[in-house]
Image 1 (spheres, rainbow, N blue to C red):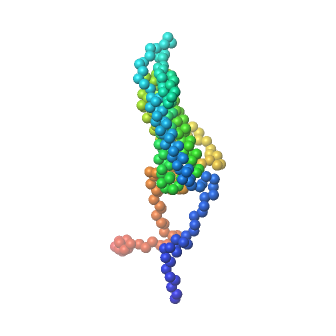
Image 2: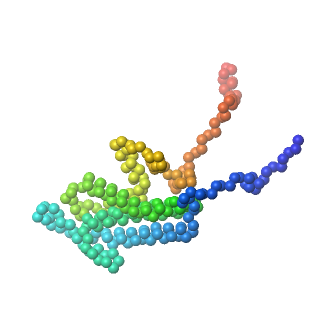
Image 3: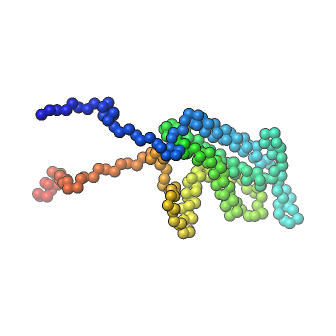
Length: 250
């Protein structure tokens, strides 16, 4: 009998099939300059929003006297942004604050996602569009939530002085930070209340229980699912334990 020499680890690694190259559109990894430009864009946008929040924060304004129609007059105060100074009402200030807070929350989510993908060397070009548009999506969703809460829980005669800008800014920041979860939760609620439409042929809807990376790996904060236990092959017999045999004999 001729015994074959054992295969070494180096030879076993060389015999492994090579990974297929990514040939889809946007499937290539982002280069060094792309990572630098994306990071500069997200950081600069975040600094601009922080500066805008401080500049547009409403100053203390005494409650104006009601007008002849019985409605409270809006408080108008000057706002300074860079070299420009202009008058703006508190209602417009609050709208701008909500939009900027939603965009800032989305940028925090984008920055966290970028350093996760870059750290794992899995940042592909197809995700760049998401990172660029994410602050605008967060601002829009935050405004939608603001309109729903302001129109549903406040009187039409209520002024900004009767509300708290801190509450709306905090809510908008959380909505922007968890914009995907907020949209999916609204989707689940409305699909429960109304008829669920049929999915298109090429649709890839996001699910509430999702969270995997494009490569199939779990995302940040998501633990991998345990693998299924190996099942016995068909036709194989499981040997009984000696304890079971002794019990049957008794």
